[in-house]
Every structure is written in structure tokens, then in C-alpha cells.
Length: 290
Image (tube, rainbow, N blue to C red; front, side):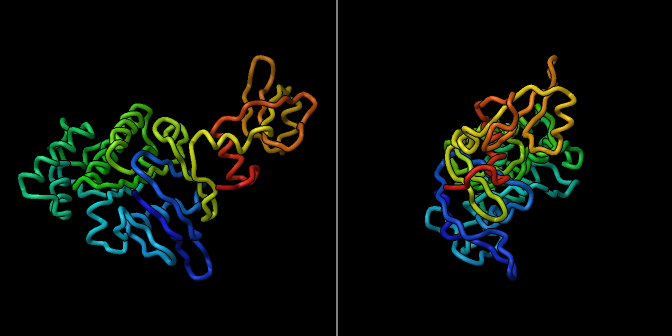
């Protein structure tokens, strides 16, 4: 179990992450929030890479302040994964295994073979990583985080900039970890969260707004989501209004928005999606609660 207990980070008078508490068991959890919400700060605190101002984080009772013990149990994949381009994937992973003291030489080599197969890099395992695509580098980043069989894996924006096929492949790699580890996945791609996460945490301005089931996000826009068909002229006249979406149809422009009252006589109530509930929450259009 990965636990945060009043965990927070402050720089002078500014809270990058206000004290928060939660417990994550085995499975995949999504971490959502706009830029500057505190997601990277939270992940670095949980990984023991950043010293907290208040509280603590622990994995099965081992504090992340105990760097020697905790880092063997926690794998971390930053958004930008830098490698020595002349090394091969096999060489890089063996180096990581030595740094983590992951068993004997034979055990390390066996583990590296298993990880290379798990992230589908067998054909390129002995090629210099300087020749790798961005998707292959991110898969290698996940493999290095899995060296030593960590009990928690923290991944920052793993699918950013990838094509749909590579995103699907990477999501499948992460999904395979769910039965044996706690996985915290940060991303701006909501479809990735919907595909593999059952529970989600939402941050805004350093505060934890939501920690619960993915389906619960839609409730923040329930009863306040409106949809109507507008003409081109009407749509241009309301361009300053807050619209969640505007999509052209054969009959005009289909508009959706969140409002406490019917925005136009033509609008009717609609069922919100998870994404619309999330937008209502982070923009303050929905009441934030845990």
C-alpha cells in the first residue's frame, strides 16, 4: 500500500502541494490536473526524490525518507527519460539492475531478459538506444522502473507525443502491472485514464479535489450539462460564453456547456461524460469535495 499522510511541499510562502492524505492499494490509479496543479511535485515526493515540507509518504510502512530501502521498492518514470545514446537497452537495464543491487549477476541478466520481453523490445534489445523511437524509449523507461520488482510504479506522462498504436502498446504494458503493483499514472490524455484506470485523483492549484472511482467524475456536471443546436450566426454571437464543445452537424453547430440555468430556450439537459465532469471540477464549475 502506497500512503500519503499530510504530505505537502512549500517553497517560501507558496504551497506547490498543500498537505494531503490518501492510500493506494494494488492496481492502476490515474492522476489528473491542469499544468501547474502539483502532479509532478506529488510524484517526486512519493518517489522520495523531493523532501516534503510536511507529512510523509510510505510504502508498506517504509518511509520514502529512508532512501536506501524505499527506492528499491518504488519505480519512477519521469516525463523526459534521458539515456546514454551509445548504450543498448540490455546494457542500460543491466546497469540499472546493478545500481539497485537486484540479485546476483545471473539473476540480473534473467530479470533483464524478462523485462525486455515485457515491454516488447526483443528485436531492438542490442541496438543503441540513440536509434530508438520516442515510444521505444518510453517503454525502456518503464522497463528500468521495473528493475528489482518494485511494489509501486510512478509514471509521469508516458503517452505524451506518441501515435495511437504506440499509446495502445504502452497502455497494455502498464495494465499488465496492475495485479502485482500499485501504479500511479499521470497524463493529460483522458482516454488513457478511461482505458486502464479504475480510480482517479484530481489536483488543482496544489489541492486534492477528488479521490475516487473514475465514474464518479461525471457527477460534478450532472443536472447542469446543457446541449442545443445553434446556427452559425447564433454560435458566433455566443462565442464569449463558456462552451465545453461545439461540433458542426448538417443542421448547425451542436453546443454543450455547463450552467446553473438553461443557457438558451433551445437547450435541453444532457448526460455528462467523465471528461465533462472533470472539466466542471477543475474549472470550479462543480463543487469540489472528496
